Length: 545
Image 1 (cartoon, helix red, strand yellow):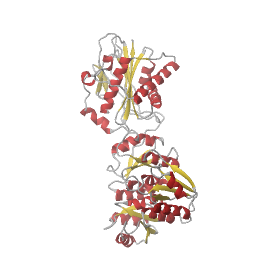
Image 2 (tube, rainbow, N blue to C red):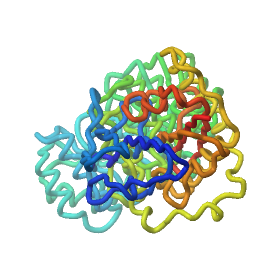
Image 3 (cartoon, rainbow, N blue to C red):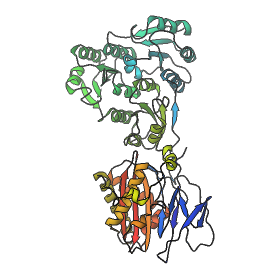
């Protein structure tokens, strides 16, 4: 679903100090009271609202604007939101799979190999760590089966649909029992082959030699154990690499020798470490390379490393990105068969970096691997650039308190980051005004306080609305103002300078917001920025004194 936005550009001019009120009722603007997105606006104000949010790398979603004057004799229709002009709205995020890892592996197989596959690889469902390097295998999908017991019939059915020349079991009998291997042969009619080594490092080496029989100039190297012993998240993210095998290495000498021998057997001339030096030290990388050239693909976290791997393979503008969970490596393993977009690892919570992981690739379509139990709707929607449903729902459950309940006098000091964003907005807006022959706005400390107070209230609730009837921003101005206005915008977390430019760009693109920015009567401004759970909110107030 497209983010719902309601943009109402309103001007109310009053000749007296008595503030009349205009209102919204059943989609009509009428004298009396005016409500925009659940917030009542009153007083001598010019109000422009941009509800929802945007990222700097795409045009904002804006509704058609309406202007109302108290002298108007009739009521004006409110228009439904329109999509962004010139830039496509983000596609609705989708999922592949769900219902558990086995079902998801089958769904991926059907998506990646609709016409069949020459090989099928089977990994252990409960602990597929031995099979992590197999995510690069190119000839077929990885399906999951239990270590012991009965193989689900849907696995047999998928193998029969694929009609491979053979089924390759990844790992020794301790990983997948001989009984399970026999079931695969009996119920599919396909020959079964095992690929494994004495250790997980040895299994990775054998998988590499199995996949690249004639050797390969490039070899990727991942930590065999990872931070928790469950395998390397970097190896999982590297499933999209198709130009070389993934070897693994541990800290002991036996593991290092096993990996180094595999490099020599593959005749590799370059060894690329996956992850930072905390995952694979420079010393171990050098030992494994044995004189071959070395390189490294790394970010500061597993999520940023997956982003760097994705950039290496797909550049900066893939049409699709697949989200894989950072907490369950199984899903990244089976997703390696997907070749039409990078695998991007995301955290379990939609933190401030989740959207940024995606915007490095523009505005691609988003597909989550697995069900909501591994990647929540919230994470998926944030990654796709969608407004959160909870932001709409919480509105009724979290009414705005009155002035005296919210304010001390009146706002809290902004964080250094948000203070820098405020200054960036001020500079960007004044640059636009001056360039168009309009005088620069002077920041007013009292108005700053009013703007910050409302931005902080919005950040606390994540309910994006203008000041309502219980809190009229102009009531907080110093006495003597004659004309007032307010602009708002919500962005995902970006640095101060781009944030200021992004606010200016969003407001310039909307007639009502732009009217406030360029109104020659305004000579003072107040700016407040506050960071919520996922959004950074900006409020700019205007006044004529």
